[in-house]
Length: 268
Length: 317
Image (cartoon, rainbow over all chains, first blue to last red; front, side):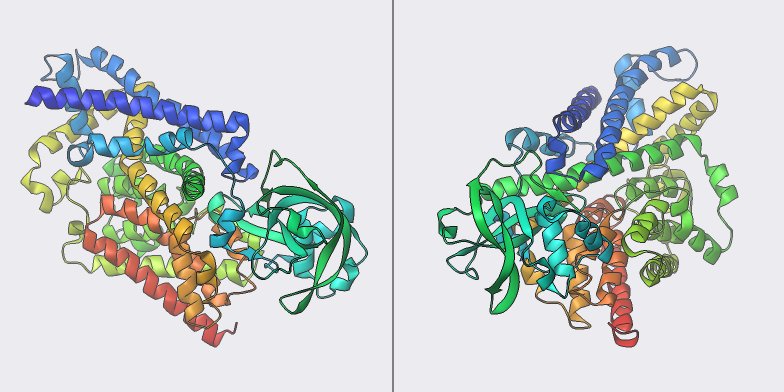
């Protein structure tokens, strides 16, 4: 019985090493391909470097230790007769392994790996807005809004516009300014037939805090564009009515369907 | 299918951001295990209870870990014989009172009331709860049996099966003294990987729960609740629990709620969230008894609720 337990422990160790290497490769792959930023904001790129290095270092500690244990034979261990016994003793040192160092708990760590491989990385879309809501006037620090306003109007993205509009008490200042933005189409029951919202998800740190922001678009052919499709919009800001109040909107002169950008999120 | 994709994306988002912090915490914990002896610790820990608890609350400056990393570390520190009050204060305070979290709060709110309140209230709540725990006549009984091997020699509770474990600890201490540097580093890494697997499964399950909640429960149902002095605080606490974002970045997230929510509720979010959320609760379960985990959730919850309501009613919104 003892022998079987030892065998199981050592094969569990092998599994742990595989999972650690797998996680390291997973972080590495997401980092190198840039898919990492589907999940977290770019300023946290170094986190994945930390993860890759530590995953591999932890994986290495298993093998290296085993080799060294052989060296220790002569001076440290008093009761070891074979290699397997070594490992048993070793696991006692890490005492907490007894109760829950089982197969199930090790396999749980493989779940992110499996989901990461099975489910193709996809960014949040209009479908996720149903749960998360969309914000036309979200709180912005005045610094962020001021920074957005330093950008030439035609260069501003959806987040810049949303910030600028949310922070101002005088939306008139935007009327007549040219807009040229990319985003996905979002609409719900609040929108008139000739309106939709050109929206983007913004991340602060990771997708768990993703917030959709958008700007209202006014166009006669608005209904032609399906929810969640990506569009490039050119037009001019004018006043429109949304939910019975005056709001700045882009009066579109040109709406072109487009591909999802490589970086679909905007980062706060 | 759409829902599964959304779920997987949010889950991986939380995991990818939190796992590196857990790895760092595990590394710190492995290094503590191998390089700091009980005697070292005894020399550093103040004799008097209140002093020790306050030191525990400030120890985040020495070990800058967030709520994922602090759990394995605090387990090892208990192992090194720090008092329960100090450990609990460290567990609850470290995610807030550490250089990284304070820097991000400063970046989000500037040098002002919010930063000072977050720091002082975090310390107050953590040390009070630490002291409360020290009132327990059998302080060591709060730890989950078997979760901390080295307690075998130190506590009456664990003395039922101390023999083997103690022997191994002795052997290990012997090993510590004898082994050259590179081997001790390997030992640290090996301990770190044990901690990573031990805590990692709770991180995975907690992240899945949080992602599941976010996929199913509408965030707007939450935010619709909140401008009343009491309901806003409750809402932000619930949000902090459900979102389970890392304490090093939650200040930025709270910014999004600053205009719609009361000041007291934002403060509660910033103090309660780092102490308790879905994923840290799962990790607590690995270290403490169930009843204690309940206290570790309820006490910070009630205290930050009261603080939030007090600020709303007396300082203004």
